[in-house]
Image 1 (spheres, rainbow, N blue to C red):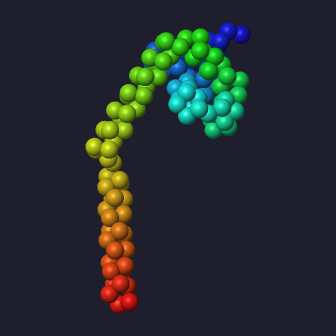
Image 2: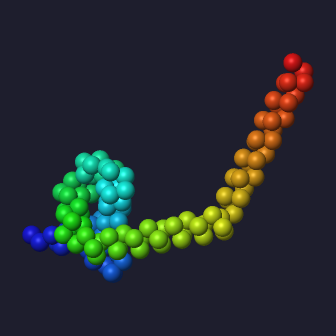
Length: 118
């Protein structure tokens, strides 16, 4: 079996572990940026085997320059999407923020009332 046989190369920016919907970026982010062990990664992503995790890490080590660029692009895209979501949150997020603000006001009011009456 060749190392590449562990992956589905759907597009230059979409490499997934064969038989799963997990992209190599998720495995490698946990390994590189969070210093997770292969065992911890396999436990976190239950549809992925420990062998697939090791294959992903080995693929990264064999193609470090290319895969590092792949990861950098993915991280940049992720940060861009997170920023867009923060700037234009879905309507339910606005409702949750309003509820949280109201709860904080109510709590402050209760504390003030207790201090005055105490």
